[in-house]
Figure 1: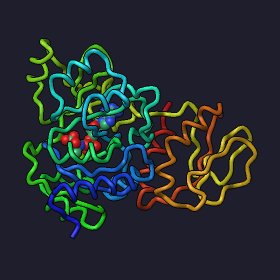
Figure 2 (figure 1 turned 45 degrees about the vertical axis):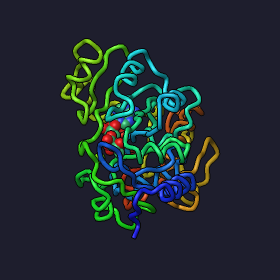
Figure 3 (figure 1 turned 135 degrees about the vertical axis):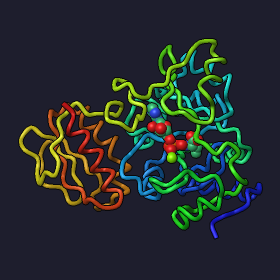
Figure 4 (figure 1 turned 180 degrees about the horizontal axis):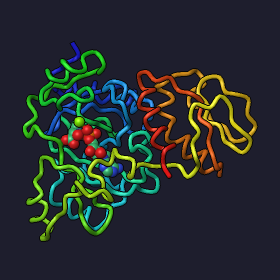
Length: 316
Ligand code: TXA
Ligand code: MG
C-alpha cells in the first residue's frame, strides 16, 4: 500500500524519495499533487509517464516560501505584490526564469518563464522544507481524469505508478490554484482557480483581466504560441541528416559530421523526454538552420515527444 498517513516520519521518507528522483503524491489545499524534484529532468519525465500525458505542458513548481521562489523566478513589483497578498495559498505566479534557475527545461516545457506556487497546506509545507528542492507537481491524476482531492483518489488513479502517497486528508479547496501571469506590469489570469479574480483585483486595487479567449494570449500556455520554438526548422522522421543540417538522434545515431546530440543512445523514451528541450536549445544555439530529427516511436512518452516535435516543426 503506497498510502501513508502524513506523520513526521512519513514526510521525512517522502522528502528523501523526492531527493532520490522518485515520485511523491502529496496534499495541498487545492488538490493533491504528483511531485518530483524539479531540477531532475528524469524525475520530471517520470511525472509525464505516470500521468499518461500525451503532451508536455509546463508544470507548476512548488517551494516553501517567497525567498525560495526568488531563487527560481525574477519577480516584478507586480509578482511581489501578489505573493505578499496570497502566499502561502492557492495562487500560482508565472515569472521570468531567474538567471541561475536550476529548474529542468522539461518542467517549464522549454519556456523562459516558470510557474511558482507556495502552498499553505501544512503537509505540503513540511514536505517542501524537508526536501529542500523545488518540487514540480501537476495534479496527481491520469491525463483526462479529474483532479484528486483525497489520497484514495490518487491511489485509484495512479496506484503503483507513484512511490509514496502522503495522506493529509481531503484537500480543503478542491479546485486547482489560480494561475496569474506576473511577468509584466499588468496581471493576466491564465487559469481560473481557487482564488477569485475579484480577490486579486481587490488586493491590487485595480481590475484584472482573464486571458482566456484572446487568440494573442492563449488561456492555456500548453498551446503552441507560448511554447519554446526553435529558430531552426525541424525535419522529422529523418533517417540521416542532409548537408548543413544538425542531427537530433534517437537510438544508434545515423552517421553524421555536423552538430549532433542524442536524445537517448539506448532508445529510452524517459531519457529522451528529459533531454528534449535542452537538446533542441543546444542545437539551436549551435546555429543550425535545420535540425533533422530521427524517428521516435509513437508509444508511451514517445507520444508527448512527437506531439512537441510536430508542433515545433509546424511553426511558420
Ligand atoms: O492547484 C494546483 O495548481 C495544482 C497543485 C498540485 O498545486 N497543480 C496543478 O498543476 O494544477 P498543473 O501542472 O496541472 O497545472 C499547471 C498550470 C497549467 O495551466 C499550465 O499551463 C500553467 O500552470 N503553467 C505552468 N507553467 C507555465 C508557464 N511558464 N507559463 C504559463 N503558464 C504556465
Ligand atoms: Mg490537472
